[in-house]
Length: 453
Ligand SMILES: [Zn+2]
Image 1 (cartoon, protein in one colour):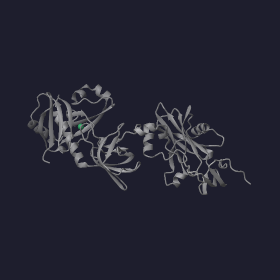
Image 2 (cartoon, rainbow, N blue to C red; image 1 turned 90 degrees about the vertical axis):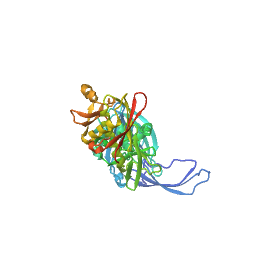
Image 3 (tube, protein in one colour; image 1 turned 60 degrees about the horizontal axis):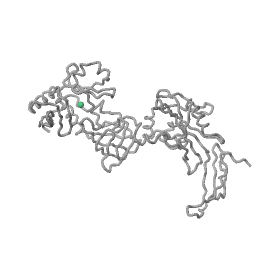
Image 4 (cartoon, rainbow, N blue to C red; image 1 turned 30 degrees about the vertical axis):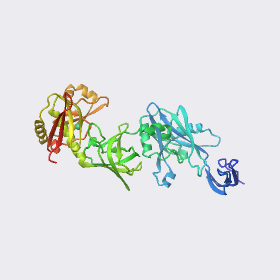
């Protein structure tokens, strides 16, 4: 009779368990046992007879190579037949991992597999946790390690794997924050076996607070007329939906956040308003009781265009209003689809009739509205530019977006702004200054409406 495989030892004795039969029914790389048994229930009585299949894989190790200086991680891509069987993309993004032989220490496996699959030699391993993944049918226990390494720049880090074992892995060096975003987008299907998202396990706090999330790509920055766009859901909750990209303007600088809809196959979520989230993200706030899109889903993000277009016209008109009151500091402002206002630090304002007339002249002249990104250094090197600007740009962001109305050499208005504008001033249509209000000794509030609508 054939000896019992080392990976399929008999079930250990346990006071509550009676093993009636324990047979190895398959003796391949991973043995399969059929076990007939009874066990003690919580009330102390003995259960009826059960027959379970038990797949013996013993133990495994998964490693997250982390570079604490660059704040990046190494992941691998490799072909996985079981993923194909599950109906998934068979090229999976994973943590390096491998199985433990009988008598081998988990840390030995961690060192070996990291080298074989990534070419990296970590100088330190830290055990994160040990867990079972398929306790309903398999004995495999996984050890998760964080490993300290120096990683190259993000990108492809070469191909590895033992050719004689037909292994082929491709290393991906990814900034840690991008790895978190990939997890949110469900791109790390597994770490090995039926793995759980190890990157999140390494630092659940960061994942929970939304730190390390990729900044949202702001599509309205390049095209204020983009009414809709497809995007991927990175996270979704009652506190908001996070997309990888969005045409929605997030409330800021006196301009309201856009409303609209997220639509996906089989669902729609009305967006009440887009607001700024943590770390340069945009949160799409769901209407009360609305269904949320599934994480990882492709959605069409569509704006409620009519109010947004009015905001663009109003916003551009306020730039023109600024240009008519040179030298006066702007102390506040609010854009609305029906009425907007700007507050000026100004002792003696012009009349509303004069402002209305001058504004409509600028509208009729149909000045082009353009933008230009400059660096802080470029701003410092061009003092004339600073003098032209009606508003001083915020410092510390590195790059500044300048919005210009009119010709480059003689702009009607030039100022740093992150909002949405129309292409040319004629699109604003007729405007009217309806009211001037005293708000304190020096403060004058100017109200503006889109006339004739
Ligand atoms: Zn603006």
